[in-house]
Amino acid sequence: MLKAGGDERLKGTKHLWLANEENVPEWRRAEFEAVKGENLKTGRAWAIKEALRPFWTYRYAQRAADYFRRWYFWATHSRLTPVVSASKTLQAHLRNILTYFRHRVINATAEGLNRKIRMVKEMACGFRNREHYKTAIYFHCGGLDLYPDWKHQHERETDHSIWWSPTQNPEAR
Image 1 (cartoon, rainbow, N blue to C red):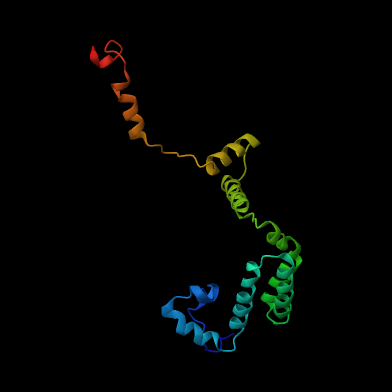
Image 2 (cartoon, rainbow, N blue to C red; image 1 turned 45 degrees about the vertical axis):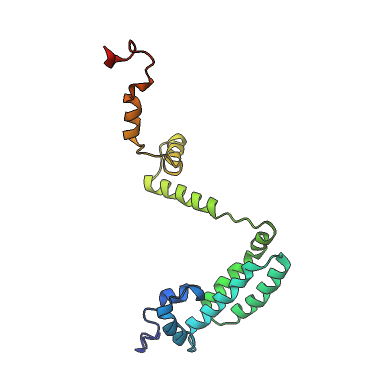
């Protein structure tokens, strides 16, 4: 809408809005502060995003839930459709989100591995049988070194100091 009206205040600022406030580069801080101070929907959405950050620092689930309720009220009354949608999604999963405060465990590693396995399946466009699928998963996710250090391997094979007698050393003949 701004660009259609010839307003280019937000031009080139996408990554500033995605960053946390302390991560905005010093050389862009003045520009960011100027744009942030204007009454734009982008600035309001960014402020709501930033206001949710302290939620993850709470130690107790009940206090985090109380903070979330206040944040949720603000987000749903912001009249910013994407923010309202995202806040409703968080509300729908709040019970599971609050388990983080009890256990302090996240499943990001498992999610990352599952994503990698899905990519293996998509790259192959299917497998003939489950064994081939399992082999492909081990191949791509097993952390194997496909190119071991052959130079050292060859040196070990040709190191004749391991021969214990001259009669067994083929080069001694």
